[in-house]
Image 1 (tube, rainbow, N blue to C red):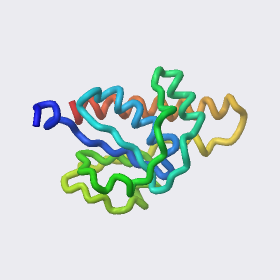
Image 2: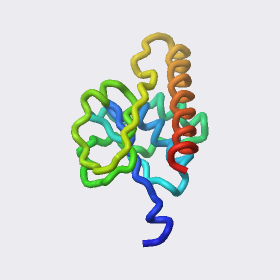
Image 3: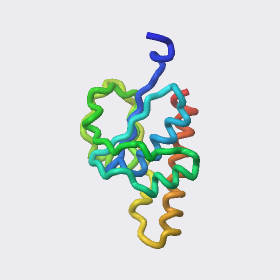
Image 4: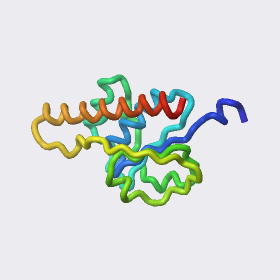
Length: 146
């Protein structure tokens, strides 16, 4: 095994529906960890990609349009180094994930998909969530991983 492979970390970002916050976090973590981590996102349910999440990430130069909405059970065979829950519901209802030494982290990010109102109000909500997630992912990569 090469040095690079040995240092590669497996990171799971977990949310309720794997449609919005976990997808954005996956996009940013891929950017900030570069080739030091394999990033996965999943939900305890699958709701498909939220088009507004895709659009707000594209504005920041990150294309998540090819991501898929995955169920956490699809990844039971992966030994994760980090499991990051991005909403309280996922943290409280997460099934057991058999990663022996995974460091579990939690941050309840603002949920823009719950905002009702005008198009501009929804845009502001997605922008707020994206910026929170970006800062968290940048700090995670800088302080914990690299």
